[in-house]
Image (cartoon, rainbow, N blue to C red; front, side):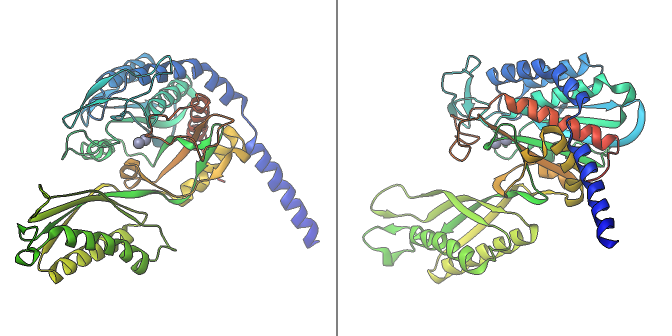
Length: 435
Ligand SMILES: [Zn+2]
Ligand SMILES: [Zn+2]
């Protein structure tokens, strides 16, 4: 009796699960209708990349398409951001979907028919500009999703805000805010408060056709730290007459690595502390009076982040003090950790599985890159997933990763991203059964 009840229950569950993961002909039709445009937009954007806060042409292309589908986009948010709300014909929840718009100071090699030849200056240096992170794909996919949803506006439940965000990679001018923080500061979620926000990233570390997602901590928090060690200048032949900030800086750098390895529970959550610059002095036989180290800290938990910063500061100050020097640490947070809301992740995972096939949705490992999508996801519950972009026949583990000039997007990722985000939005708005 007990056994047969269990059997019936498991058969029912299997049937429901199968129905939930069956590909939907409506989704196929809706995606196919925008497919050619999505490819065309992406190639256009790829050929005309723009650095953060300078996405003028990109914003114009976005606003024009949003107007074409009957929306009233607001432009000029956080410099070049664009936002529009689609109001469905039926009552339902409010959600937001976000795409980032900016390119990187990377020179694209020749090859693609629509390769970028754009050059500009970045912090005083002449550079090429390339969509080496794939944000061209994100904009094109979100325009495709907006177009497909607008086509079914009359029967669509709820409201969708499309958020096109500038400067995810950071502002070209030091001191300016990152795009997501500035959009929120300018009230993007004030009048229209979504109950959930979604985002995606094309990712060379996964094969095209697949999607990676995980509940909880997904992408790291990124801090930019700066350490100034002050000693006392003297002749290089007579170090005892001064205080050598280079030796002290080197000691602090090595001690910081021991600190991570010996004081932090890295079995609970990963921590990375890296110095990317170590500058000091002007001449071989002068001990300078100052050394400056600049680097990044990556963590996945706000409490761990605070703890590591406190320990790093203590290590630096005490080591400097021991040598008669002083050390001053400043830390600026560029993006908090991206934490996928566990309940929301559980809810949307079946939609992703339905869109691309259950076996194509894989558990994503934590990645130590950062994303300022976290600013939105810290304001309302959010889910951020990865869309594989490495062509079949190439090992994703060896494919040039995002930010490399050799990063190549397989255009199949455009279709996968559009299908996945569209299915997710339709299921969420329609109140599809939870996974
Ligand atoms: Zn990037
Ligand atoms: Zn990116």
